[in-house]
Length: 366
Image 1 (cartoon, rainbow, N blue to C red):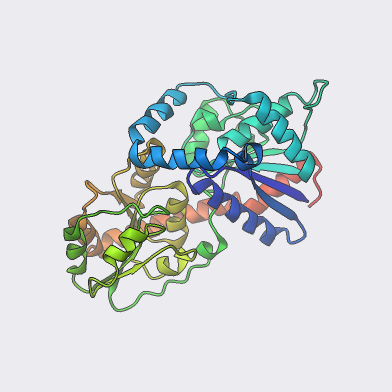
Image 2 (cartoon, rainbow, N blue to C red):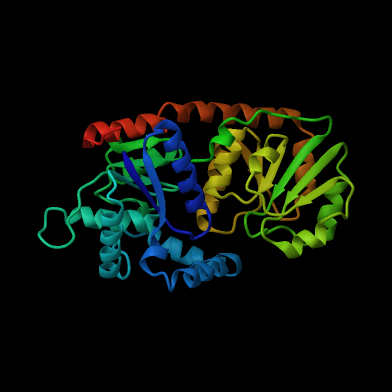
């Protein structure tokens, strides 16, 4: 079985989900060939870096512009036509001829749109023509129409609520699997290693977007019987400003082994990205999110509150809220139990079962 995972680096969530999917597929199908391709870099190699940097700039400093675009497109229809359609169709055709996959998994809406368009032309004479399974992996708790394309054979969605929303928008319920958002195997295997002190984990994502106020960190340092780990990501300036200043706070930079810190944590404080949210679910560590700024993160945060697995802070400098939750063992335990039930629900439609269904329907050898 040859599977191609198509993605983009608009934020690292899509890329991270792709790598996790690849790991899971290789674990379940050791003889499979599974490759991940950044489609935008393949299609426009001279422009991709600038486009990704521009996106990061907008979501960091111009979130209102991004939210305006997101809301406008949310009122649109499924089967969106991507910009520069002809160029992207040509490049996707070239990429698929190179890899010759048995199935494609798209973890970014643009990739799903382009592959769906190629499948639409499968019965039309010409250079496009394509017929192979397209699986769309939704990487936020969202049913935004950009994810919906009529030539999709299967949707991997994060929750039952999103499944119901897709059905309401006309998607066949038979092609929707509730799998959660893919996370690395290490998060599935976390063994709790709690110590004598409470353990607080604070993460600012890859860009290290954390509070700047020294008073915030002074307050964290003063929480009784609590050790705090702060992961500053690639924000080296913040790392050097915080490192070594407080006896109860450990500061580390970028790490690819976040699960090791989650295994020790009683509470995680971070932004509500889709990947991070499901990492905390599989680690069964309750989450307090910063007030979300991006529209899809607002949806993620609203869902975690509705499910009772975490809370949304009233403000970014939320040391008092953190201490209140950390001291409330009943609230923490209740959130952990609800996370455990969500994990069990997702196991009912595992990735292994999903791929077997695709193989049976499309004649792909597994």
